[in-house]
Image (cartoon, rainbow, N blue to C red; front, side, top):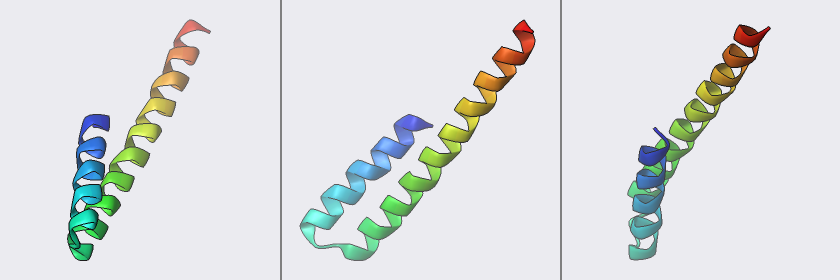
Length: 54
């Protein structure tokens, strides 16, 4: 999932550099959403690992 967030970020940067503002904004938004979903899964996984050991 982090891979796809980085892919959309790169697409947003390239589209922004070429002047495609709408595509850049959409790609950046998707990348941001995927990144926060990844962070949520990371926190859930860490908490689950801590509770298993206890």
